[in-house]
Length: 331
Image 1 (cartoon, rainbow, N blue to C red):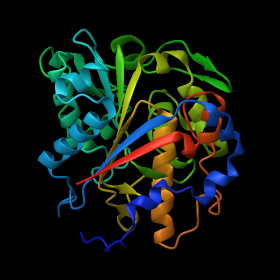
Image 2 (cartoon, rainbow, N blue to C red; image 1 turned 120 degrees about the vertical axis):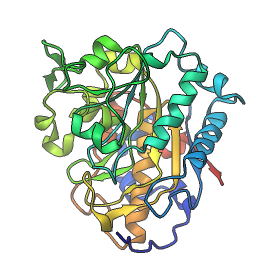
Image 3 (cartoon, rainbow, N blue to C red; image 1 turned 90 degrees about the vertical axis):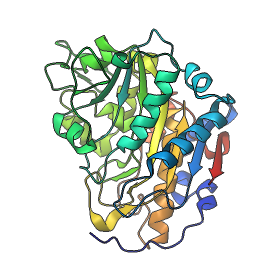
C-alpha cells in the first residue's frame, strides 16, 4: 500500500491564525482569561514504512511533552499530577477509523507506563471504546479479568450504559457505565482527524459521541451543539484529567473513516488539560494541511468546526489562539 508523498509543511505555520478562526467571534470572551497550554512533541520520521510509529520514539515524545507540560522530570512525578494510586483510570481511545486510522497502541502503551509509574494498579486501568470492533481496530486484546490492564467496550457485558438518560441542553443520552460507575479518572486519547459532518473530530468529539449509547441524532447541524453540551455534563468534566492527542498519523479530509489518499503523518503528540484549546490547535493543524494540499477551508467546504465556538460559550476551555500557549518541541 503506497501513500502519495506529502508536500513539506512548515510546522510553525500552525501557530498562525487561519481563516476559519476569523469566523468565530464568539471565542473572544476567553481573551481575558489565563492562557491554556498545549504542548506538542514533533518528530519527523516517527512513522515507519508499515504506517506504525516507532515504539521507543513514541515513548520519548510523550515523556518530553509531559515534562514540558508539568515541569516534572521523572515519569512518576509527571503522571502523579493527574492521577493517584487509588484511581481507576479510563483511557478513552478511538478506533472508529479502522486499523490504519485509530489511536496507536504504541501511544496507549506509553500512557499506561506513565500511569503504572504513578502507582495506578494495572487492573485499575481500563482501555475503553464504544464498540468491540473499535477495540479490535486498535489491535489490543480484550481483557475483562482480574489481572492485567482491562480492555473492553461500552457495548460489552463488562461495560454497558446507564438505564436512565442524562439530560443536557438540547437533549438527553444514556452514558457509558465505564464513565459513570467504573472509573474515577479519565485520560482522553483521540486521534487527529477530519470529519465529514463536524469538520474535525478530536478530543471533544471523542467523548461526546463515544460515551453515549445512541450518538446518531447528535450528528445533526454539524454535531452542534451536541459535542459541546455533552462535554459540559458535570460528570465528564469531573473525571476528565488530561488529553493525550495522537497526532502521529491522522487524516486531513474524508474522515472519520480511512481513505488512503487522505491520510497524513502529522508526526506529533500533543498534551493538554484543556479540551477546547487542544481541539483549536488540532483543527488549525488540519486546516494547514488542507491548504498545502490545495483543498478549501472547512468553512468553504460547508462543514466548519462550529462546535468550538459553542464549547467556548459553555466555558469548556480556551478557544482564542492568542490565549493558547502552543509550545512545540522538535526532535
